[in-house]
Amino acid sequence: MKLPPFIRRAVPLAPLTAYQIGGPAQYYTAPEDRDNLLKALHWAENEKVETFILGAGTNLLVSDRGFDGLIVHLHKFLDQVKVDESSGVWTAGAGVKLTPFVRQTAQAGFAGVEALIGIPGTLGGALKMNAGAFSQEISNTLLSLEIIDENQSIESMKPEDVGFDYRLAPGLDNKIVISAAFQLQQDDAEKLMQHVREITALRRNRQPLQWPSCGSVFKRPEADFAGRLIEAAKLKGYTVGQAQIPEKHANFIINLGGAKAGDVLSIIKTVKQRVFELSGISLKREVILIGFTDEELIGS
Ligand SMILES: Cc1cc2nc3c(=O)[nH]c(=O)nc-3n(C[C@H](O)[C@H](O)[C@H](O)COP(=O)(O)OP(=O)(O)OC[C@H]3O[C@@H](n4cnc5c(N)ncnc54)[C@H](O)[C@@H]3O)c2cc1C
Image (spheres, rainbow, N blue to C red):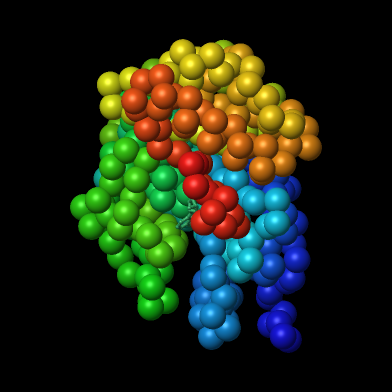
């Protein structure tokens, strides 16, 4: 098949994910403007090629075979941040990195997203995951979203149309976030920056940040913690190939160097099985898996 100039073939995905794991994308595009983004989506639709939107790949495990479709990597544009200081409305593109955005708002004396400091990834990924930490979620201060819908038209959405829940944004399935507006509150910049520094230190103490990972692998079950359950199942230190549940944080799986997606998937399945046997709790994955067959995903 002859490809349009903005689409490449066989692009390695491991370097584009926080895990540093996975095979290539069959097709790949990194649009530089909306026009190219829409053209790429039209191409995929015409060719009946599955698409996947990639932000910073910080919550993603790509299979060792790669992804048999088009990866649309939103990191080259959608990077503008605008603020209306009098109303406290901040508008940012989906490709903006969350942690620098949070720092910028806190330094400017605006409260509402400061507890999200240290979450890697883009704003688009954060909204799709309803990312959160320390009792704040990205959706808490969200005013509106600009999205591309299933018919490739650019539309506006209200948070109540999305049905945000814990690490869930069901209304964004099959949609692409372009930008988002947040209603932040004026506050003391020094107090907010102090909070930012405290959270940064806590994250550094609790998380094995020197190793590639996707952060927490499992969602928090009701009235318990995934990390506590995994530790109780005596799985700290459990290793398959070059993937390991680290001593420092039982809800992480780290890549010790050269881990395969199959190693991580095998640990995920063991954790789910052992925790269920021990506690009757069925852990739910937070990490997104792409490129795996339905059979491979059984038990994950
Ligand atoms: C060390 C570490 C710590 C972490 N700590 C936290 C934490 O405290 N809290 C937390 O919630 N998460 C945490 N995470 C997970 C991750 O950072 C978040 O889920 C993040 O919001 C994902 O953003 P991303 O751009 O990397 O998304 P990706 O991993 O690229 O994609 C994640 C999902 O979002 C979709 N997506 C991406 N961009 C768009 C878009 N523009 N429109 C529509 N869909 C899109 C993708 O298709 C995919 O389904 C952590 C990860 C790491 C590595």
